[in-house]
Amino acid sequence: MVALISMRKVSKFFDTFQALKDVSLDVNLGEKVVICGPSGSGKSTLIRCINRLEAHEQGEIIVDGVTLTDDKATLEKIRGNVGMVFQQFNLFPHLTVLENLTLGPRRVLGLDPKAAEERAMKYLNRVRIPDQADKLPRQLSGGQQQRVAIARSLCMEPRILLFDEPTSALDPEMIAEVLDVMSELARDGMTMVVVTHEMGFARRVADKMVFMDKGQIVEVGPTEQVFTAPKSARFGAFIQQIL
Ligand code: ADP
Ligand code: MG
Image 1 (cartoon, helix red, strand yellow):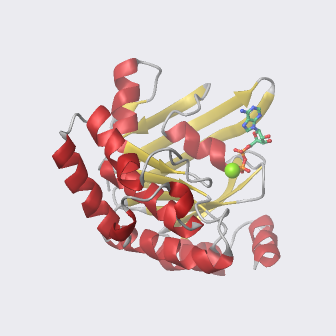
Image 2 (image 1 turned 90 degrees about the horizontal axis):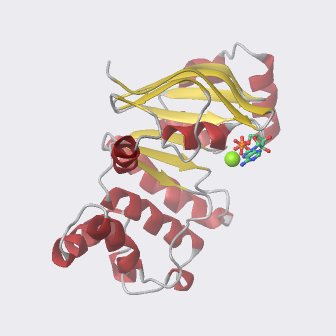
Image 3 (image 1 turned 60 degrees about the vertical axis):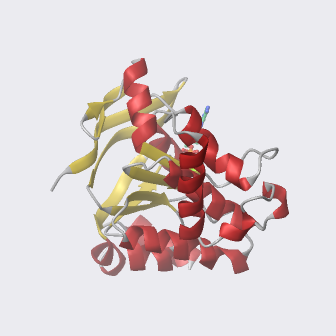
């Protein structure tokens, strides 16, 4: 097993408030990890530490062999290797779908316009909306916008994709189309860390389940084991609540 992400006793503070407490987690190459837990339990903070959107104060995070620090070369390497999909899509509203997709490859990876467009269309096809390329984000449904956001991440050809509640801002009828795209990425072997409360998706796709509470991982294990025989009463209670 190759650990693509390795967190060792990671703690993160916001002033005096401790948002992560001694969090240790390994994510292996090709593994799909789902993180759930109550609001405020530190799920976003945990995955934001993986791509250094947040800096941890204690412990160690190694991503694809690189120990996370504020060193500029390290940050560039991490940002290139780790893609992130947010709840609120975070598309540039004044750029077309195609422009949203070509921006990173051109500016960051130095692709020429033609190569960037070819790559963008490849991934728009992958998320099944090649016909939306020339529209502005606001002309698309929420589900389509989130699929654009996923395609935009894929355009950077990352080794790891992080998702922070990617379907939480969507109307119910659009959730499935986004989860379907994510399931396909999982099938194709992408290493994924997904914060979600979509337990059906978790059970189908996740190799490993993580349950957080108050900044700590209180339950972690193979998905079926966590669902059928959770070690903590809190996970059982949480599941009852959201189903
Ligand atoms: P979750 O994603 O599980 O809902 P978060 O990781 O967003 O939880 O937040 C964990 C805790 O850290 C919460 O109590 C939240 O208020 C706090 N927190 C998150 N970000 C900040 C910040 N930038 N400044 C201060 N407190 C923060
Ligand atoms: Mg969150």
